[in-house]
Image (tube, rainbow, N blue to C red; front, top):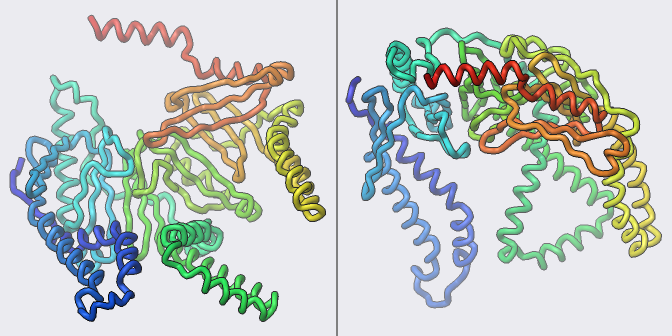
Length: 505
């Protein structure tokens, strides 16, 4: 193959500087607050502006480092591998065989799009850390990205023709073809997604983290005096201001979700899912179908009222730089789910499970919550009497929520597929194929055995961790039936042993 060396685009140097500044943002803010606005009393300007001078020197150092990283980074194609070399004092080389590459994920940030560039993340089957890609090309042209795809396809085609090579069983990548559109989020669904997202919680938690990190620099005493003066204007004014503040935070959350999921599209290749999204920063991720471990329909209580749900898949790897759980359909009408899922997973049985939890298992859904809440309710009632008595209202809430969970729980087996439905806050329906389930477990304690009920859990791989689907307090005989379904039959065990014997011979 060609040994021509390729370099990244010069914008890489600036991106590296910005990335370093982003990682150093908290220490830099501390530096400015600690000394940036204080008069040293020496009368010498360089002492008065010492923190700003240090900040300027650090930015220059970061910029020089970014230029060095850009200049020393090269990649090329040789012996059916993507080869990368980088580093100044310690030169590093990374060789990635094309047949091991599972996906090439693309991101177009604010600095990429005007120059028609992309960031390429290389994901392999053996990647140990889902939070990091196996290789990253920070900024290359779209033509260069397409060249990598073509080289990878050519390599995999050659691999399959090597008859004497055991790698002939590796999946073959066909030459690039037109993708089949499976799902595209329209503006109406995008707006519903943005307005009902949980982004407000992330923003508030971010503010809380900031307050904790910089508590010593924040003048809380002065703020307390100001707030006390403000409260004198009246409760109604305070409530209005608080509501306006929450409205602003909600608006920011809506805007962030809208920009992040704008143009959300799912396309289907022969062996891969291609998911694209984003307005300002456009992301494109490829998910090999053979790495999908389970499909889940999730309905939070608010969206469930309007017949909406979202569909996620558990991937044996990362996705979109977030986690192993990937949003396949971020928001879709429950009645419209079957079409896209059948197009992507033709063997999937997308039906509601019908086998329910028996009535005698009902009490176990709220008994544990009631036991640990009872001391809390007692303490509140005693120490904050008489207002603490309002905590007694938690008892019917706990019982009603437990009954709601019991009513929601169900399971079913369809051939080689296990379907489990259960509820925490959101209702989840998990569809898992037998060959994807890593382990299955039945749990019983003394009280469960007396009532002939059991807890069944099935685990599938989700990145470096697992996703645990669990239906609680089903009939004991049903639990054993599921376990028997999961265990390989005697005939299959014998057939498997014969195949192994033939291979050894």
